[in-house]
Image 1 (cartoon, rainbow, N blue to C red):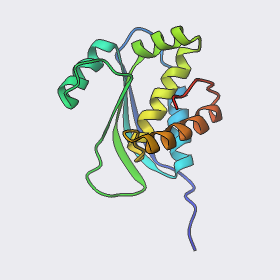
Image 2 (image 1 turned 30 degrees about the horizontal axis):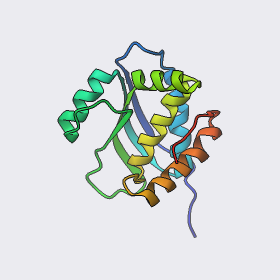
Image 3 (image 1 turned 30 degrees about the vertical axis):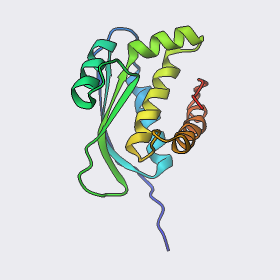
Image 4 (image 1 turned 120 degrees about the vertical axis):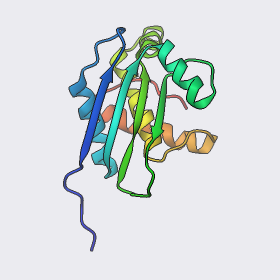
Length: 155
């Protein structure tokens, strides 16, 4: 007999170091908590909101890529605790604001897409191979409308 998890434990620190868009921390909390509940996971996470300059520095220093990117995620899991994830999601709000404006949708939705994408990476999803990317993007398409976001997700 298996037990259903009734309560997911979540420790979430939200750090907003950008000035492009006001981040509603309660909305971010609800999004992350809802996804963790849906996935049946506990988590200790930091979500950091930056501009393109700062995310470019991190991307270069940690991954060797000399360009700004939309979102980075770093797992801090040292053990194989299958129901607990620890890590950090770093979001470029500047990039989200520009893409949202170019594509005619809300900045909040673009930021939510980046958070979902980063969180799915921490949950074990991978988008390096086409087949895996398709699966990950499908999961994003399932999750975002659940939380009221209607933003395009890449194929």
